[in-house]
Length: 537
Image (cartoon, rainbow, N blue to C red):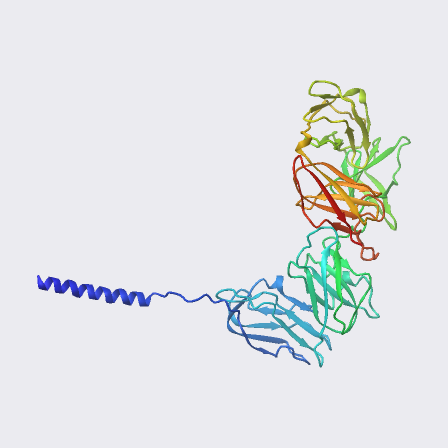
């Protein structure tokens, strides 16, 4: 018995020793590393002058990685070809920059890495590291500061490029379409502010560019642009702060192509506004030849409809606008003629201030009211008015609407006729109204206003859902608004054309001014909001 007890005690002691050893061998971990990597040295040293090397090495005290380099790295002035920077993705204790471009004399270069340098274990960033050198005898040290905002939208996009171009004897405004700038930086945070450093004293063109291709060349098709009224003078006075308004230009007019769309219809592909475009047919046409045009609702194209048919293998047209003119040949073959198709809106519910639209795919020409009836839910006939909108190619119906009512619009065969004398089959549309208490209303007083103005309610997606054109001082009543959150926007309609007009860089035309009410408005069903908006000068 004593022997058994002795063996049990011995086994227990051995177990404790093993468990203790096992515990000592289990790593418990220490505090998380939150320190960024540290630069030990650079070869050549940062802020070197009379630089003529082709390779730079930057050494760290621990393993680092370079990530999202394309998004973060800014080289000013830009280099072409771009330098090779390693490592990318893998870990290393140093960064190598290989330069292939021929460096400009007496120029200060800056490599701003943003937040692309992180340690290998915890991804702690070395924030906004900048390597600077000069090919001359000193480092340029002047600074330009400013901010960027969107000319139309309340929220400004991030990562907007700020570009400076030398204004010298060879300078022309077209430089932004052809050459890379002298200096560049980005707005890298939500404040949309920027700071251009290491600038040489001189005169510059400054532009802001939402550079979709990241090539520092202005592409009107893709990019937004902002510019100042005058060149800037960079000097030792660094107190001046610049503001640039970013906007999307209306595309310059271009004639792209023409092709047969269907029998007796030609599609002219255009870029830019199709307003005031002249289309003339040069081919021989019969004496009773007539034509009409219709703008495409989803592009800048124009559709050209004609009758009677012309027996020919091809038709020749000239297309012109202002100083742009081209001759286009369209091959013709037998095709089916378009069937008349209708699209109606709104669908389902209709607001008290809305018109009902019936839109066609072929130019509409006339309406026969004797073949149209509008009834309420009690089958009582309702009076209405109708008009043809040639821009949208739709008939618009307007009528007095009652609360919580159901309306039925009937168009019997032959009610609508198009350019080719096609008519509709029977069309039936049902529309409902809600209670007026299902909507909200806003009464707005404008202070310090300069007329004419366009008052808009913008939804959370940035789309203008309600608007009024105002050309005199009065209360602005926005009625029957669907409940939701809206931003109030006022457009200063300086050319009195009842729409917002964007800017143009080459014409030095700024976009029309826009002001936003500082508070988001929450429209509730059955509630009336009374607001006062003081517009700034």
